Amino acid sequence: MGSGGLELPSGSGGGESGAAGTPGAVPPGTVSLARPMEIGADLAWGAEEWAEVRLRAQRAGRAYIWLNLVEQRLRAVVAAVLRPIYEPVHGEDWVVAAAGPTGQEWVQRAAAVREVSRRKGYLLDPADDTLLSFLTLPQLRELVVQHWPCFEPYFDGRRELELALDELEVARSAVARNRALSPAVLAQAERISARLLDLLGAGRDIPSAHRLPVDAVEELVGDRFADVVGVHPDRVRLQRQLPAEDLFGRARRLDAIGIGLNLLVQNYSGRRLVRLAGSGCRVRLLFLNPASSAVRRRERELGLKKGELSRSVETNILHMRRVRSRLRDADAFQIHVFDETPRFTAYLVDGDGPDGVAVVQSYLRRTRGMEAPVFVLRGGGRDIVQGGAPGGVHGGGPHGEGAEGGLFHLYREEMESVWADSRPVS
Image: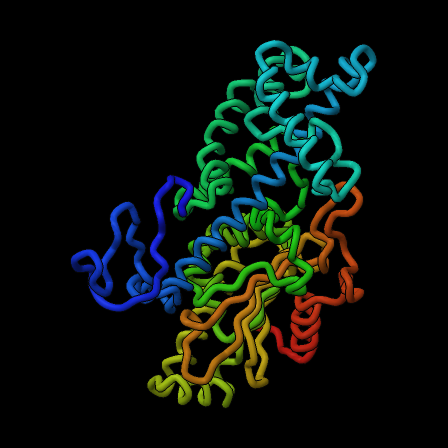
């Protein structure tokens, strides 16, 4: 007998329903149920379904990290500003008092959720057993808006802060409900979150931030990948994310080693190089000797005509010599050639300091430099968060990797070794 007073069939018996009393007949007052074999559902996921699910998870994961950082920062700001005002009078109920009559509904809802979490043992950290920890990002925003005179001394623009939090709500809603995030919404969420962290006083004062900002994911899991902060299938995609102007602009030191150094010579004008060197940047360029046997072997690997690669390298060297001739201090712009077998090309920007950035490519037998994979490295080991709170991602890491333990240092040492055996170009 079912809950509605109807009798459910036993499921036994044979064929289709017929007249009363015949095999398979459904007596009056019963409900016919589909047998499991009649459903025919396929619960397996194919390759396309798994690919779609993984893509959704990757995007939602990146957005969640940014949202989590913003929410934690905003919660800390609210506590730092409002707690000293309300706690002396209202004690532990200072959040309720700060919410006021207009916020009573969502404060009571947060209190109910906290009570359930207490009973079921969901509060794993005693520090989270506060009402403030159960407020959502929109509710924290309301506290800031309601008490803006208290926050105004610390922030410049209320309107900008409100608009940024409103824009972030689209991504927050999608992540909270496990809905798909489009690339455009994800990019917008990352951009707005970074801006909000700056507005809330949590921006990172990284020396190299003008050319390679520290990514939120890099801060959390960067030590898993030594000092590799970017991998690109080819140089074209690298330049979309890190244009030559952003990479080389405002550098105080530039060291480059490779066959023809096309990323620099063909994508950064001589006029800019003159200005860069004139502003105090020290430049060292190390080309493969165009007259060496290594150039001819490389031409055969790539299937080029005899002399084609050597002429290209000669042209690049002549161009750099013209740049050097326009400088007052020629020693600040050094050009050398080497005769060894080329193993990689590398551009090390500010490689002598903790804020260095390097772009590295290995030479593949049948692949031109424009088409070879590119690795972007950040100098200084894993010490990428400066002035952060205790417990952040700092140098050393779980395996003792410090400023001298990453790939950046390895390529810098290789550059110095080849430079010591190279010859200057007059």
